[in-house]
Length: 502
Ligand code: MSP
Image 1 (tube, rainbow, N blue to C red):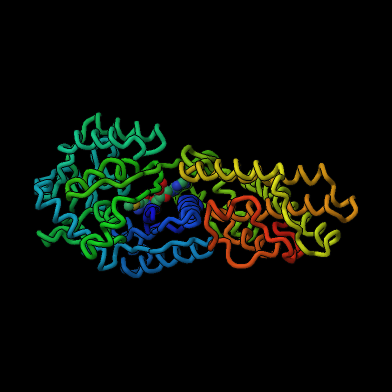
Image 2: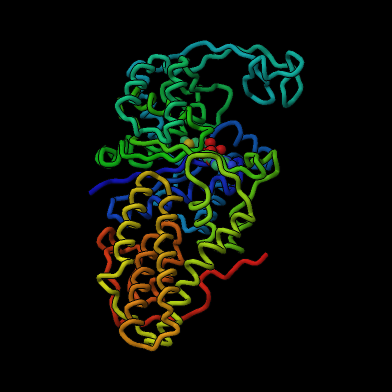
């Protein structure tokens, strides 16, 4: 059985979940659902990144301990994902004992292999920030940009990862695995970073305590990124369950935003190599969701929470928008008007009307009992080519294309109904054939749209009289033309996607 291990970045708990985070998580969820449908053994991981100075500060600002603060925000992420039907198999928190163990084991392996060493580090330090600054970041020569107080020249001992010695091995990996980082432009960006020259990186701190202790030197904790990345190994049993880890690693597909490309496409593969492990199978990089042309951020006060949109669009409308309208890869502008337009066009009109029409006419002309599809229907060939296009798009992590292909079947079925006008005809074989085909098309659409429409696809399935769960079906067999069981009772009910008029 093919294994498919898909991950989202783990989200910092200093920020509340917004639609930028939801975009990645919904994409990962849709992919996980697709791969379950095609019968893969799927493991879908998300979680929260809970160490580091930023989190420590956010906790202090709220009068909480870092752990109390992390508990609260991590919970908000879980609730948000529950509200979006995110079907993760595991939610990892970097403060869990299993993650401490895995981080320490992986880093110990890199250390034992000679890739980590203690070196003095000298830099301009703001004590209030507990952070180093470069000269260029300072105000008036020597003032901290946040506190506007003088910085100090500080010397501390840090553990360094000898990243500079991995350039050749990294470039070799990029060459041997052309599909490891997608899209192509991001792959080139990562190669450019390596060719531009890699410097050794400082991976530990003595000035903070909120982190995973360095196992061979208790005065140090790992800098937040070098425990965070390891979450992907922790969750599949690194250092705890070798058989499980062996089964899942390196089958990982990491979905990430472009701002964390360097960490995932350069540092992470090198760290894995240093520990004697293989780099992940794939890193798929996406752009930002912009609001009014700007990246959403706390400071820009332009954050939109999923809960702001779900009451209007529903879970399906929310998921559909981010999968269909935000192409995975480039930056995309979020617009409320655009979201309404897409919802009304694709969901309320095309799909919603198709279901409403078919169920109404089946009630009137066939006594509410679904007729059989025609094996020779023109729609059969369309459904087959739609399946091929959708499957290839999901494989390429192109949900927008997959859904566009799926909606071709919706449009063609509507067009076939409009051409035949069964609502005007007398009951009989001709009407039965058209409606049987439309029911069969709806059945296939429910299957192919189910990674996006976690609820509506099941409702379509139920209303056209099918038993069981869409998620229990297996592709490609279930999508073959002719599967609709004639004689099923079709239910006519209210609009699946009420039109949004505001
Ligand atoms: N904790 C790190 C990731 C560690 S992974 C081992 C982190 N967290 S984050 O919460 O700041 O960001 C997580 C992800 O959300 C990143 O991929 C980032 O690109 C994404 N996004 C944050 N804002 C975004 C948008 N406005 N649009 C799309 N994605 C954005 O970085």
